[in-house]
Length: 276
Length: 319
Image (cartoon, rainbow over all chains, first blue to last red):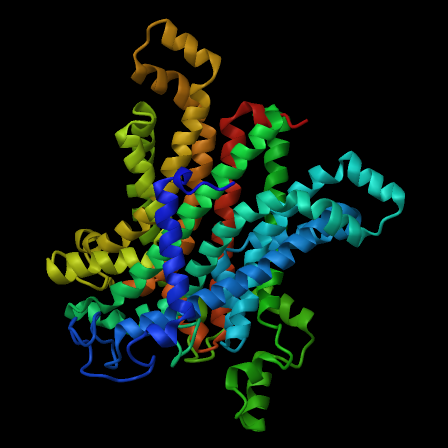
C-alpha cells in the first residue's frame, strides 16, 4: 500500500499546497475575514493587521477575495476538466471500437479543431456567446477534450486488438459494454495521469480568458479576473495584482508536482508487471 | 531534387491548404452558433427592430450561410476583410500595421530564445544529471506552469516601476528608431522568451540524449574524440530534425502567445486588436484576426513538417 515516507518531497509539497487551496475554497465563508464584495478601507491600502494582504482597486480585502476567488477558479476549471474528460474519453473509446466512418469523422473534426490555437478559437466563439459560467465551462471543456480524445483513442485502439475484447465481441456483447466494461478499465491508468495536466491547462486557460476580460465577469472574480482588476496599480508601485497571479502559479506548480509523481509511479508499476 | 521528395513536399502543401480551408469554415461557423443570429448577439436583447434590420442588411444576414461564407472567404483572399462594425474602419488597413508590429515582437523573441534554448540544451546534455542540468529542468517546470501575466507583471514591477530601466508600457509608433523600438519591446520579449525557452530547451536536450545513446556515438567516444567534438560533429547533425521541429512549433506558439503579452504591455499588435474587438462583439474583425492567427499557426506547423522531411532523409520514404 501507499507508504507516506516513500513519497518524494516535491510530491508532498505539491499535495500539501493543492490540499490547502482546496480547503480554502471549500470553507471560504468560514475562513475569509470579510465578505467577497465588502469595502473595508482605502483603495490599494498596503498590508496591515486588519487586511493582511492589503486592499484591492475598490478598497475590498484582498485576502478575502483571494479565498473566494479560489472557489471560482477551482469550480470552473474542475467542471471544464470533468466535461472534457467525459466527452473526450467516451468519444475516443467509441471511435476506436466502432472504427469506419464515425472514427474518420470524429478524428477529422478533432484534427481540425487542434489546427487552430485554443485561445484564438475561444476568442472567436466568445465574440458571439454571452459570457456566463456555463458558456465558459462548455467552451473550455470542448476545446480541452481534443487531446483526451486523441489519447484515449490511441490507447483504446491497442486494447481493442486484444483477445479478451475479441472474446466479448464473439459473445455478442453490445458496443456500450465493450467500451465501458472491457476497454475503459484498462485505459484508465494513462487517462488518469493525463488528468492533472489537463486540469493545469484549464486553470491557465480560464485565468488567461478572465485576464483578457472575457472570462468570469464582475462582481464575481476568479484569480485571473483579480489580476485584471488590480493590474493598473502596478504602474503606481502597488503589487496587488501579483498576489492572484502568484497564487495561480502556486496552484499549477503543485498540481504539476503531484501529476509528475503519479506518472512516475504508474509507469514504474507497468514496468514491474511486464518483468514478472 | 529527386521526384519522390518533390511529390511528398507537394502532398504536405496540399494537406496544409485543405486544413486552411477547413479552419476557415470552422472560424466562420464559430460565429454562427447562436440560436438567434449574429445581429441579435451584437446588439443585445434590448435592440430595436429597426436597428436589428439595419445591421442584418449591413452584414448581409438575409443570404444563406454558405453564400456569406464564400463571400467572406473570397474577400479575405483578396485582402478585403470588410469594415469594422464598431468604428466603420477598413479592417485590412488597420490590421496591416498591427500585424507587422506583432511579427516584430515575435521575431525579436525568436531571435533571443532559439540560440539560448539550443545552447542551454547542449549545456544540459554536457552536464547530464549534474547540478546545472537539474537547475535548468527545475526552471523549466516553473516557466511552463506560471501564467504569462505573472512573469510579465513581476518584470514590469521590478524593472519598469522600481528600477525604472524601461517604460512600463511598450509604446511603438511610426518613425521610431530601431534602438528605441528594441528598448520598448525588451520586457515583452523577456516574457515570451521565458514562456517558450523551457519547452525548446527540454526537447533539444531529449533529442540529443536520444542520439547520444546510439552505437556510433559510443564508437566516437571510444576512439578518443573530445566530448565537445562528439556532440558537435556526431550528435547534433542527427538531432537537427527534431530540434528544427520543436523550434518551429514554438515559433507558432510565439505568434499566438503574444495575445496575452500584448495586453499586459499595451503593445499595439494584432492580439490586442482582437481582444478589444471580442468584447465589442465586432464579429468581422474577430473573424479576420482569427483567420490570420490560424493561418500563421498552420503555416509554421507546415514548415516544421517540410523542414523535418528535408533534414531527415529517413522520412522521405514512408512505408
